[in-house]
Image (cartoon, rainbow, N blue to C red):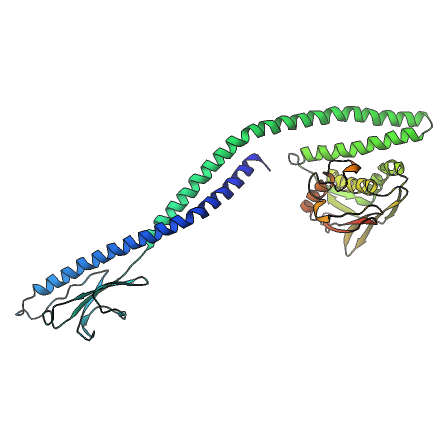
Amino acid sequence: MKDNQYSAKYALIYSALVSIILLAPLFYYMVYMKNIHAIQNELLLKEKSLLIVKAMQEYDQNDEYFEYPRFKTFESGLYDEKFQPIFTLIKTSINYFKDGYYLDDNEAYLVVKLPKGRYFGASYLVLHNTISYASVYEKVLLILFSIAILIFILSVYFLKTFARPFQKMNKQLDNFIKDSMHEINTPLSIINVNIDLYNRKNTPNKYMQRMKAAAKVLSNIYNDMDYLIKHERLEHEKKNIDIAQFLQDRIEYFSEVAAMKNITIHTDISSCGSIYMNEKQLQRLIDNNISNAIKYSYENSQIDIALYMQGGKCHLAFKDYGVGIEKIEKIFSRYYREDTSKGGFGIGLNIVKSIINHENIELKIESNLKQGSLFLYIFPHNPHK
């Protein structure tokens, strides 16, 4: 994963966790603000009640009619001792007829007891309005969003700052590995070329065969490391590959490696047409499976490799008769090795996993301890034939 993506990912996770932690105090803050809002509304209703009482006090009995005060956001009404309306603009039912301020969900009521027989025979003045907490919610969300953004920015900054020494170290390590790979490639190529030249001029012997096999094992490890370093930066061009011929070439390449353990490779290769894939990725898939089959097989045993068409899809199977796999779910983890005595770095199957995931290749595994393992790859239908 790239450094910027890494920083952004963990900064986002950290910001989310901190924001969740802040939900508790923000909740209490919201409750507090809603209470303040309710108190302000109560004062406002009391202010309106005073205006209504004042208007009724100023009413002259000689006037033909009394113009009852009306408000846009408030409703009010006059009620008798039995809580029956004398005149009311309130459309909702009232559950409270006792002096005071009441809240019923978002409905607010103020009940004011009036002097008996003074205001049109009314005993109660009731005011009603609907409280909206939208402003409170908006403020809380704005605070939460602002805190989350601030934490995210600070998290990204500090993660990058703290990671800078490690990035520098990783860069130096990457450069070291790249230089080492380059330095390994040259002598490895010279070894292979000179072994081939020697075998052409002289009768092959078991010592040269062992050297050739060891060089091929080292080449496979080198190719895995080279792919691991470069695959994220390179464009892997795809083409139609005759998989049967390609597989046969790779089996022949590993024949000397198998011979070191006196392992026989049995093949059952049928025409499977062509598959649309990058050649290097296909080679890594096949090479790692053959190499692992040889590595984990018992001496003087055999390996079965089959290629066939079934259900319109190409099937590629590798079966060995060796130690088997104890923890199948872990074998694709990078650097994981069940048997450290077998050598290697534990990156081969991790590379295979990344390739099959990218290419939508289905994998089925069967394994029994001390009996062997079967890896079956099912390639998707090729639309580029």
